Image 1 (cartoon, helix red, strand yellow):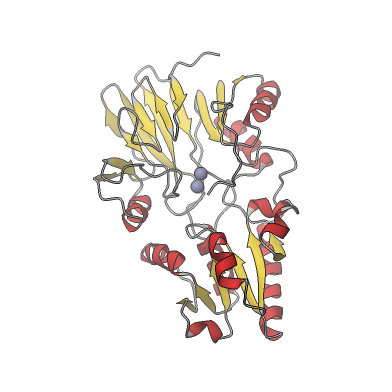
Image 2 (cartoon, helix red, strand yellow; image 1 turned 180 degrees about the vertical axis):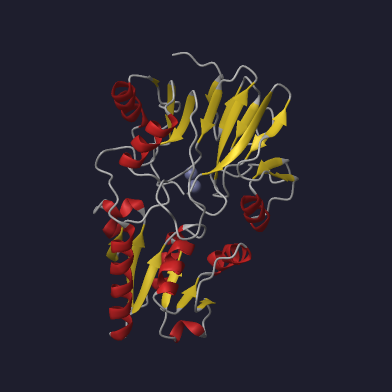
Length: 333
Ligand SMILES: [Zn+2]
Ligand SMILES: [Zn+2]
């Protein structure tokens, strides 16, 4: 398959050869563009200079990046020698960006980072532009992944939380500290449900507040406040520690992976809430239609190779999974 940009997958992130630019890593060559502040996308070395959107820059600082950060406003070209780039909103979490690279010969490459096309409560709405090469995530790139309307899932979460509280139980929502946590908080805040929020989430929520988002009656989790009638919002990895010996705790797992009933047991979930920060299979197809690439490079899917073959045939374009040798075992942020 032709590869005019010379795109390569690194241990983490991607290297482009012509022009020299790197995405979501600082271990390659050329300017390092960080698409968003999730742990698997930020600089491996927090002292290295990077480029990021203004909200992502704030989140990177909150998460310990000490090197220079050049802020790139969404939609504004940044010129380099013989090429230019601009960031487009990716709709994944606050500040998440896609990177559009344009060469002097007019050839364009779009790197989506993580993205979704649905409107999130706590992030910018995604925008897409045409490109010759599309380097896209395909985390949920299988036809079994079709997310139900978010309003329905949110209504179920709210009703379940109210019932739990009325029955003297503690509704505990599991979501990643950055992004999913704030979406959950926003849903509960809108319904007037008071919350206790894990400290890791509290920390990044401060950045969201600076960007104009509000979260109602949320307080930071503490031994004192844990006796109050509130919903808990905590990241999945602290579930066992925080709830295993709390007999009144009931769990709601909030993730795209909640579509898979097999996940219920591992999180001891009473309620499975399939709300995702990522595009589902049908949104991915929509994105490919909108970008209309000549070459497609899907990454990060459990079966990115299958997705690549399928889309290649569907759109009659060249298509290959860039990291087809990398097996994804864990859900990604
Ligand atoms: Zn990711
Ligand atoms: Zn992410």
